[in-house]
Length: 506
Ligand code: NAD
Image (cartoon, rainbow, N blue to C red):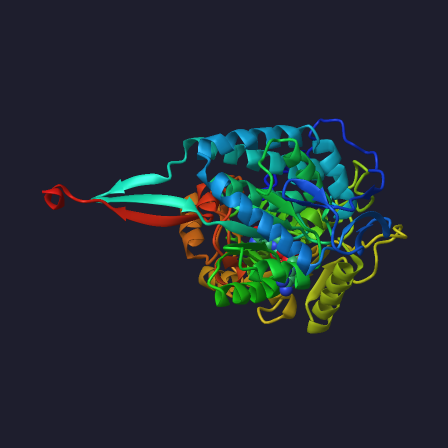
């Protein structure tokens, strides 16, 4: 039976997309240049970043570790390209996007395979989430750029939207190309120029993108790529006098420090940060559907998803049945090599991430949560790789560390409630507010609960993900929105031109 996967990413977890899967490991890759001013340029130093395959624990690719000097060079290139690109009509920019999307589409198998090897996403999921999603996002921004109107009349004023300027895009590793295109596509469509700094854990698709862009006719300097450490290169971009806006996706701690640096310099920021989202099940819900979907959502990308529903909030009277479904769902996962089509959960991205997640599982046990399945031991039969067992805790108290922290691994916390009001309070009892879900046989009732949740998105009874709807955080999950028109407008600045009224003209 095909099981429906309710939320982002919006595809069924165990669906076979019916395409030939690129089960061939990518050969070793080495990029020793940065993409700046339309050229592949030598970095100022010779230091390289090794990209480790989390399944084999071996490095399989290398990219330059750029310096602050390289970052400054890239921001100068972006600043030089800004006047011409920002003056290009938005509809003309759309044509370049179509070419980028088509070129990307031709390489989806390769992109999926790369991300499976650097992040550990199972190959079938990688094709959908890591490779095809960025193509979809790029195409949607091409379409939007063709129909978007930057000017509108208001009384005696002409209200226009202009490109913000040079944008530093700093991105994470969990959905590397997807997170990149959610910034690069709207920023370029708006008429901004870009310097991209990808995560050092999964930088390879950023280099593939630079290759695609090079062949797509984008003018030199409009898109620039520097790879390197966040603390040096990322901060240099965030503080550069050439940069007008910092668009950041990553942890709340790094986002807070970038936000402070940008605020001191009065730069615009877009911050897409962490989450600890709740799936709230009402007593009249289809329990099997609600619980199995919530577990699948929590475990997507081995739990390394910002919007994952990592808390499952359920009526106390139904706790026993909820636990049974949750355990059965968790134990169906097949851990293994992400390039094996049968695998449904790969390793975590790095040894540090594995250690951090196992540490949280240990804390959950010490706090007295009820460990139903999984645990701190490595999964049996897997001798290598940063794997963690799919883990379910029940009877998790609202003050437990595992109920409050973003764990970013396959760890579900079940929290029982006695009244629906208490369930809503539990769902909202978080520093974060990125996503969430409500399940009820009565959609109207679910909708009224959805209105009470303090999060940027809520999915009612497994509603599908909408690529045109705004995505972003309340509270410490961030500032600003991505996707669709909302994402585009983050990169546009408002100007009001006051025109003489007929009376003034007399
Ligand atoms: P991270 O914060 O460690 O790194 C993100 C990026 O910021 C990387 O490129 C890194 O090099 C850079 N960076 C780190 N410290 C920096 C600093 N001081 N100055 C400038 N740049 C810096 O996050 P991560 O581990 O790559 O990603 C996981 C996190 O991202 C999770 O918290 C997850 O919830 C979040 N995330 C959020 C969304 C969203 O849309 N809200 C989407 C994906 C991931």
